[in-house]
Length: 82
Image 1: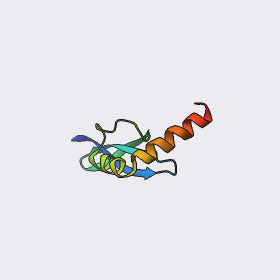
Image 2: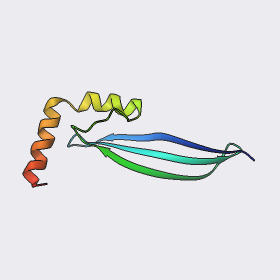
Image 3: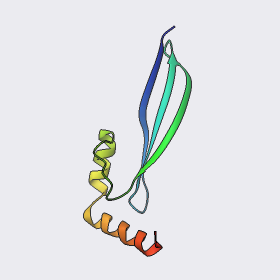
Image 4: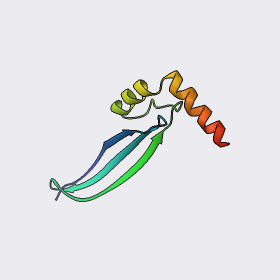
């Protein structure tokens, strides 16, 4: 009986305000058969440091988090008073 823990980024979404939503799946496999899994989500907002993210997430953030997108996101947050 061999147990294996696998973590993968299985979903990346860019929403209208420029935030990148990342879903990570953690699966436990026994002899190659998945016996358990759970999901974790987090958001990378324009202007956030994404250097520790998965390579695919980094590529998407680099493409979408332009200086214009960052400025627009910060202006929207300021307008909300957050």
